[in-house]
Amino acid sequence: MSASETSRNDRGNKLAVTYREAADSIGVCERTIWGLVRAGQLRAFRVGKSVRIPVAELERFVSETTASV
Image 1: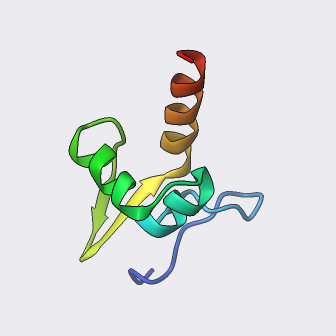
Image 2: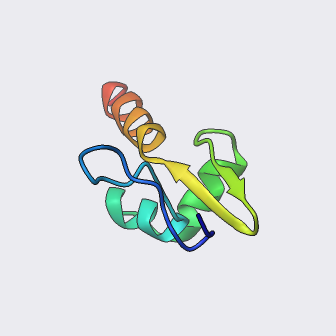
């Protein structure tokens, strides 16, 4: 699998997304995602030169963040 391809689960959904896709999915700017990863609030992983954020990690972050509001 090349860095430009993204793994999908058995339902065809992406397992991990780019910073831009992560930002779009939760309605923030890409820079905010970078800051959250840098601060350790979101986990990301590197595949070659690409960085991906697991969708489950985004779901965890949103769930924990909305629970504290």
